[in-house]
Length: 202
Image 1 (cartoon, rainbow, N blue to C red):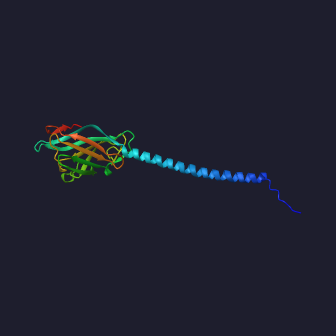
Image 2: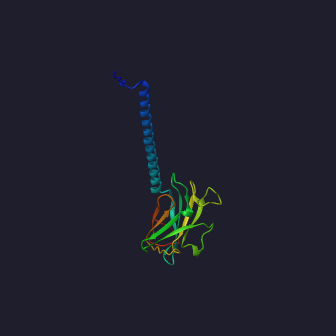
């Protein structure tokens, strides 16, 4: 006599176990895929925000650019302009901000750094520094080195003592390079006649 096993199908319990196993594997796989997708999306957003921050300027010019002229040498001595944060701009550390001056007629450029003194620099320090006078500061009479919202900083650059010869009708460019954000260029033109005080054209 031969005995045969009845293998017509799974019982209900075995089918439930297999179904649970499939559902568990699918849930784990879906979680991994969704996690990878969320991570990639977050990184893409960070890249976009960083790119926008680097591509947009965080400061803007306020008012006119005023210069002092050397009437004897017939060239511009100093240039003064006022900066403030652009709308939505992040605070700028002026101690880490560079100012580059380019005079095409001279064929040369120099980078000037922030002068931290409370009074204008002496003659020997003017060639490498730019001086900031705070028109308005949130810290009152003891301003810090940060240009923040609602603050205005008046920047003075000593062109003549930095070795630049800006003669009548010369074009020159001043670029403000903050540590974060795009460089802010200021394109200027010297007037046909050099006076003691002048408003430069942009």
